[in-house]
Length: 118
Image (spheres, rainbow, N blue to C red):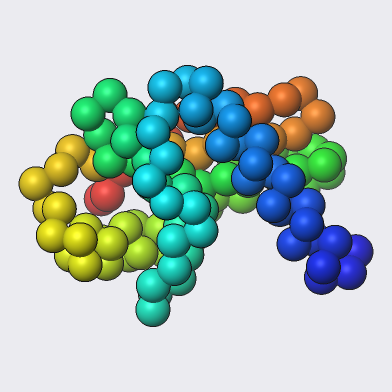
């Protein structure tokens, strides 16, 4: 698949995730937040938490579920980016959590508290 097609597929997945998150009561703060350490797909607020959301889309289960793509390396990357955000926005006093939105042929699933800072 050409790079542009992958990018477009990713954008469509993130749009589906945004719809699901909004329906679930999340207030979107930022999309595709970038800093020198990388990118976080979505930053939102929900139930008193500042939520850093990773979106994973899979067209097939050939390589596992969308959630299996959020491995230890990916989690560490997201946590580092989130820490930069917290410092940059002076919001260390906020309750924080990490959610993952998985998208596949079965629909959209949101996993709250998908992982924690260890």
